[in-house]
Length: 119
Length: 108
Image 1 (cartoon, one colour):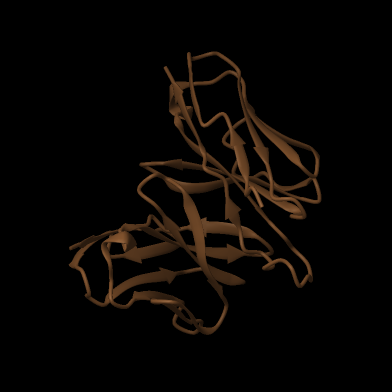
Image 2 (image 1 turned 30 degrees about the horizontal axis):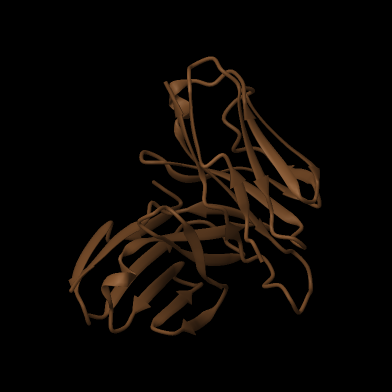
């Protein structure tokens, strides 16, 4: 299994630009999570989806952030317009929620992260 | 006060020592997770537990629901165990709240 795939791995952009981060969850997983990690605040949940439906977006900082999951194998996190304080590492994780012999229910598998720098 | 507190924040030990990292939480939880973040940044889930104890190799995780406390132990520590260990509590179905992490350094 390829694991959770994120792209790009690194992104450097200028303030005011639109940034799109991409995530491909593990095949068969039905939950997807977007996290942000900074030195000051550590890891924070931004939003998570179950079966492609957003369940809790209370961690999304403000309207500049949006996330979509058009199908079970793809999600995006968009920041528009970006600001220097958005600089962080953004992680995507996926898990399986339910009953199955082939999955550890609710264990989250993390992608490698996208390091975003907004100048 | 943070909902999830870890101690110590930093820990340096010699190879072979027994390591204990503590996690206390102040909210009701559905499960507690221990994660390992490697120096390169990758995050791996080590344990998810809601009661008792779990063991995987040299790692042992325990939880006391009444005291709202969990510990992660490493026996016979090795330099490759050097990483940041993060405690996270699950609230409701799947929402995780994270501690600030414990940076562990094992010297040869």
